[in-house]
Length: 267
Image 1 (tube, helix red, strand yellow):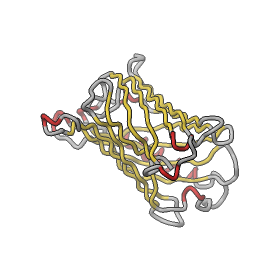
Image 2 (cartoon, helix red, strand yellow):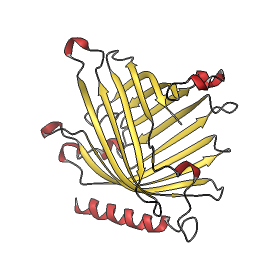
Image 3 (cartoon, rainbow, N blue to C red):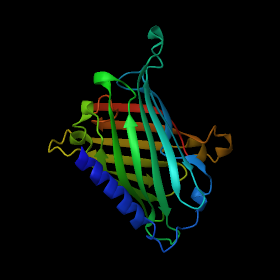
Image 4 (tube, rainbow, N blue to C red):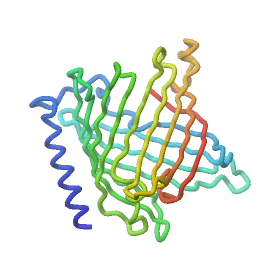
């Protein structure tokens, strides 16, 4: 455990101090994307049903808040829930909720280079349960964001070091590993109409089953018809496919295949 903690602290501080002068000697000015203190962080969505269980709803809420105008320091919070909303006979119970607070430094580039920004942060993840059902861990991470083909393709690799991992999920790195990569591709002709998102993660085990693929499709029919003024909360249809382990903390080591449909809130 001491080794994990030492490596995590070293990675956080060394990459933080390395990132500040990355785009020059001063912290870059706030870009248009970052001019508001309160913003969306990860995707916010509600998936109303699942092919494996029509009763189940999956939803995610995520935001970030800039803590200081002069320092690009952010607090972020993400909550992902699995809810048997349509199981009225059993009072529509929540199956699991995973909590993910984090704090990070985000440095942005205004130079027009491929590298749009880089984040260095520390995060906690937990399912909020006690005893044998408890799952929790902390990570320090480094996450750049690369823009390709005129921003129609975004590549987001991420590497992390876990520390203070709960004993109930001490082997979680065998399933989630130490890195992931996310690819976002907008439709070439009408990027406002839709996009495809793919995220791949591989555990440190040699077994291929200890990996995951999340494939999502975003579609905005009102944008296609030039009727976005009638869109409610800028919502879009959202199709999500999941294959592998780790969709939820409770079952981080249980392989599953899921097909879901619902809505995503996008900017």
